[in-house]
Length: 437
Image (cartoon, rainbow, N blue to C red; front, top):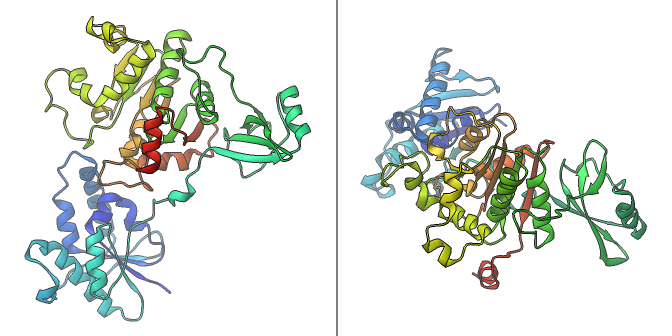
């Protein structure tokens, strides 16, 4: 049965393509939603870009027919713009929510006029969903770009096999294990089904349709070595020049940022595989000007980049005496080895031959992370690191942020790899806090 979906403002601002995301069902946009969207059109942030895109979509539809009577879209449904003269009962609204009240009233009128089919009010506003439900409406969150957090791709699979296959793996450098459902560059923990301590760590070689050993780091990465199997997998991806995109997900203390910085410094200073190490992280709120802090770009970014600097100085092995004498991460910046890049101004750039790290990438929207990835020039490697459960951006959550979005869309690509790190290595206290708090 066809349904009618009434969309709230936040749905359109979150995803302008939501106008066409409901297949052959009808979509109704209350005129009050368009008024709210219009207030964002001059904003230079992600919301402003989305507002302008919504306006362009609706204007293109308007040229095909009257929106008040419904215009057919490419998915087989119809798009309507509706208004109402209906008033909610006084006890159902507060004076400070006039726009929401008019949107709810429109949704109720659509429901009244279309009793032969279900009417569903779609909003990302939790309080508004509760209010609509109290008025007897069926309500839903907009979930077209969401992934079940329990189904996040970890990049690791465990396989039980015979002991002689593990012996052959060490002897021959590969084993003929294969599953068409595996992803390129997915890591495999091979266990002896008769002896749990007899194991091997491998990686899916997609072209050869077999499992091969992971990279062994003879001298580590800038003096550090992986402490667990997940970090070993991450190091394999970070040090492999054929893999151009690496996503690392892990809670605080799992080492994702430290490993990425160490790999970048190793590739830039020791192996000369890249021209420089480019590091950044979202300035929250992303898209706002960073001019509120004094100084040049480096000085303005310094408070945001301090976690990166901490990792660099840890890798440099600096003591407190070294820091007091003026030594530190500035040496690498002055030498041109490290460059700080504010994401606010990345649009339009082309970034060739660089090892780029974007920390706290869970605060990016899918559109923003697409903008970053499309800046990559020839021989550039991009590492996105973050924790989907530590999000400061109010417009994304653990299931639809840019980091998870990229991870899921690139999991079948041969130039990309992903690892989820779960074991904390920062300290016993940090690991305990992450587990019990």
